[in-house]
Structure formats: C-alpha cells, structure tokens
Length: 222
Image 1 (cartoon, rainbow, N blue to C red):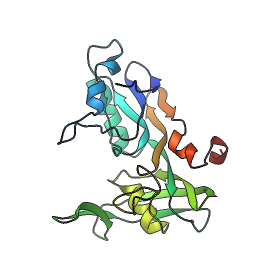
Image 2: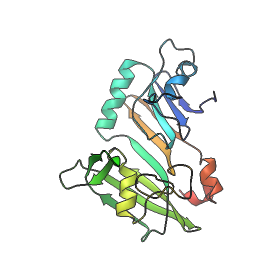
Image 3: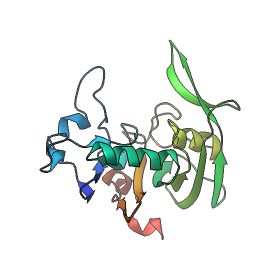
Image 4: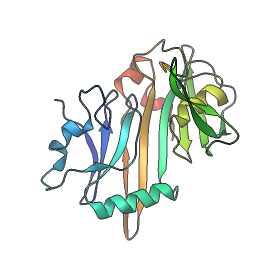
C-alpha cells in the first residue's frame, strides 16, 4: 500500500494529496479506499483523522482531514459558510473562448435504470457558482483554473461541459472518456480559515498525468 503524501499537518488538521482513483469511502463492490490508510494517517494520535469534505474518486489533490471531533465541527462550519478557498485545475477537452468568467448554473440529480445517475442544470436545482480562468491551450486541450464558490456534486465537471463548451478530458459521464485514463481534475490548493490561528493551507503539485499532456508549473502563472 503506497504512502499518501501529507501537505499540511498540525494538531487538528491534515491536508493530504489524495491520489487519483482512490475513493474516500469503501466502494460497495469492495476494494481499496482512504479508510485503508487510516492507521498510517494517525501519525501518533489515538484517533484516525476523518475527511471533512468530498472530492470525486478520479480527482487528485488537496483533501482536508480533521484529527478530532471539535476540529471537524469547526471545519464543517467553515465549508458551510463558504469561507474555504478551493482552487482546482482541469483539462478541458477542447478550446475555451475568453480568458475568464463565472458560471452560475443551478444543479440537480437525475437517474435512470439504463444510464445511472448524473447532474444536470435546472432552474429549480441547488445554486452552483464557479469562477474560471484559462491558463494555456495545448494540443487541442485547455488547462483551466476553477474556483468554486459552492460545493455541489460534479459541479466543475458539469460547469465545464455546459459553461465552457467541452467536458473535462477523460470524463466518462459528461464527456466521451477519450484522451485520458481518468477525469482530468486536480484539487490544486485549499485554504481553511481558523479563528485565532493561521489557516490550514496547502498546495498539491501538478500530477504526472497532467505533465504527460505537456502542462507544467510555468503554465499556472500567479
């Protein structure tokens, strides 16, 4: 079992660099998940840390873990108050018009026996807002920085498809799954404010599969 990189650590929080393909909770069909790393992530504490929020199984990068129940409660409140700064990088499977903007499309879940479930834009859905900035276009793909205000399920994936005109590269639900082994989304940075102390903050390095597509740190700008 590989070691999960730790990007930030103190007495109440860990921010890990979650590998792409590792689910946070044990899948119904079984298999490895973040729970299998619980003992290693105790780091001398009696209690295993708990994931405060969720990112998709395919998504790599920053994930906040709380090391005690009081910290979990405070971190949950920060997410609910939209006080947490989240930065994602996504590879959009096509050109993107414009340099930056904001996508505000409310989302709701639909499901069918044939196709399973997915999120769609709907006027009566839950509010979802994503700010975006185009970083660089290379070989027909576009590296985009996403800063979501809200944290809806599949928010960035749906907003890329509907708001930017193309799904994320490799997305099997909202795109065509071609061009990558996974949905190319990376939780680049996370900053969680804390009263009376410095924020819990971390930046996750660019993943190897992004680099294999020709993207590099120089593309990220400031």
